[in-house]
Image (cartoon, rainbow, N blue to C red):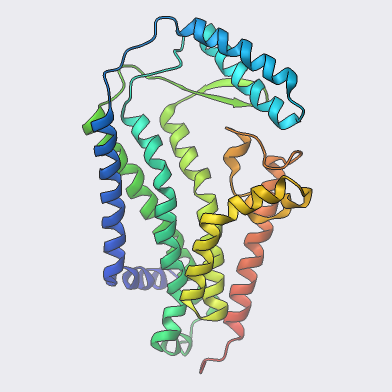
Length: 314
């Protein structure tokens, strides 16, 4: 299995397009850094920040009293709790822009990284059929399941590699342009009605992981389409279309239909349980994880079943 993965990894990096994608990602991070640096102003802490938060809480309580849905009330409750925690523990609401602020901002480029990972995933099987090299793989005395599994694991390793480049280069560039924070400022995490302090680096790693779930699910779907239909264009086109529009369409459905919670894109954003509100009222973290596992199992079943049954001469 290790040799199969090494072979697939070499195939990925023999393509010039792989280096082009890495280069585009690095350039995109650099451009964000330049724009933020040029627009940055001297930081001045508001001396009356505590009073500002108290006034904000007063307004939030009034809005919470007028809200009709449980989701809205939960949002206001979260904001009030965090503001109260800041006042009680003397943690200003604004802080000087630093390397970690930059890393959080560049995390939006996970979408761009996802696009590149989908392209690799969609072509890793279909390209073998297009080039005719699939026959050389399938006639070997190696289980077909191992062959396809090695390709999927290679895609996951490439995903980790791309995300690591995004995180590490953002950290390095952010440290150069904006410096380290004067003191360790914790991230305030609100969960189950409690506000807790979390190390900012730990938070960013968790944020990267949870934010990547949407991409990983679409990558798995693209891999399945590539394996079943042997068409990389279809896999890339459909996956990218859903990457950019799936969440929006699901959000529109959730406004009128409760069954929208069973749609894949209603469950891919697990951050909604930590930093937001569920898309459909009544959804829970365990429910979303369960739905993701069902979709993941379905995609993998279709990919491996069809690939194992396909004729070598195809």
